[in-house]
Image (cartoon, rainbow, N blue to C red):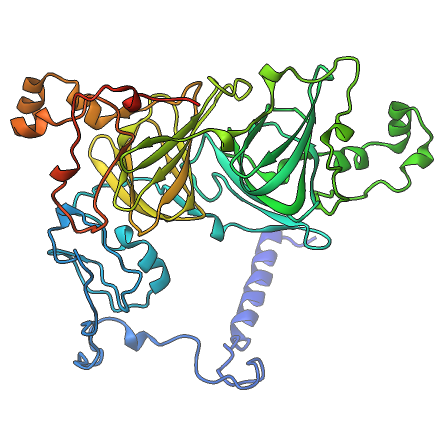
Length: 500
C-alpha cells in the first residue's frame, strides 16, 4: 500500500488534466463543409463586429411613409363622433380617425382590416382594455361527418373565446337523412334551426318518450343527461346549439356507439338479455354524424311508447318559434322566447332580433346573465362598456359569435345596407334588460340635468318606454336624429312587450 495514498491520487489527476490540455481543441464546423445541406451558402449567424455603434449610414431611400391611400366617408370627422367607417371597398385602408392614428405601410392582412374597421381605426371613445368579444365560426376547426359527406360541426368555446365562460356554441349541419348520433351531454342543449327541417326524438329519466318535427326558426331544448337523436329530412338542415358551459366541447359528447364499444360484450349481452353474437356488427368507433335511411313521413310511425307514456306537453322539448309573430317597433322587430312560454328550458332566454339598416339595438345591459350572440344575417358593430372606464368596439357579420359579460352596457348597430338578424341568448329565467334611454327618461329631470348637463329639450324627449330598437338613418355619417323622435310618453298597447 502506498505510504501517501492521497498524494498518489493527486499526481494521477494532475497527469490526466495535463493530457487533456494537450489534446487538440474541438473545432466548430465552418460554413460550407460536409455537414451543410446541398446548395447551402453563407453563415447562420453574424459576428461581434455588428454590435453597437458603427453600422451603415441611414438609407434615405428606405421609407415608411405611405403615399398611396384613400380615406372613406367619415374618416376625417372627429374621432369621438365614432362614425362607422366602411373599409370594405378601400384599396389601402388606414388606421386614421380625425387627428388620431397614423399610416400603416405593412406587412398587413387587408381582408381582416376591411371587415374590422372599428378595431383597425377605433372610435376615439374606445378606452383601456376589454376582453375580446368576437369569434368568427369560419375560423373554427370543422369536424366532418362520414362517409358520404354526411355533415359537419364546428364550435366556439373558451379555447377560442376565453371571455365566454358561461356559454359555448356549435354550428352543425346534417345532409339529407343524416343523423346526429344518439347521444347525451353533461350540459344543457338549446338549439335554433337556421335552415332545413329535422325530426328530434328523446326518452327522459321516467321512460316518457318524445318525438317532433321542426322547421327553420324552431327551437328545441334537452336538459343535461337526456338522451336524444336528430335526423335531417329530405333537404338537410343546419342549426345552432348553445350549451350552458363555456368549456363545453363536442368531442366530449356521450355517444351510444362508444357506450357499447367501451363495455365488455358479455356485459352487453347480459344487459340486453341476448347472446354475445348479437353484437358482432356493432360500430367499433363512434358514428358522430352519419348517413341514414329516410325517416317515415308519418311521425306516428316513430312514436314509440312504454308504460310511462309520452312526455307531457307542458314539459315539451320543442317550441315552434317560427310560428310566433314578431313584435314590430320602429327600426326592426323582436321575438322573445324564455321559460314563460318554453318551461323546460328553465335557464335559457333568448331574443331573435332584426335591426333595419341604420337602426340599432338600443344601449342596454342585462341583470344576471352574460349575453351570447350569433349573427344570422347582415353586418353590425357592438361597443362594450366595462367599468370603470374601458370600452371597445367590435365588428360582426353573418356567422360570427359575440359575447358580452354581465352587466356590461352595449348596443348593436346595423352597419350595412340589409337587415341584420341575430340571436341574443341569456342564462336567465326571463328575458330582461335595462334600457339606458328608458332609465334616464324615468329619472327625475333635475337629476339628469345636474348629472349630464343635457338640455331640457333632450331630457323631455327621452323615452319612458323600452325602445328595444332605435331607428336611424341609412347614411351612417348622419349626426342629427331629432327626426326619429316619437312621443316620449307613449304607452299604447303596441308599445308594450307582446307575446304571441
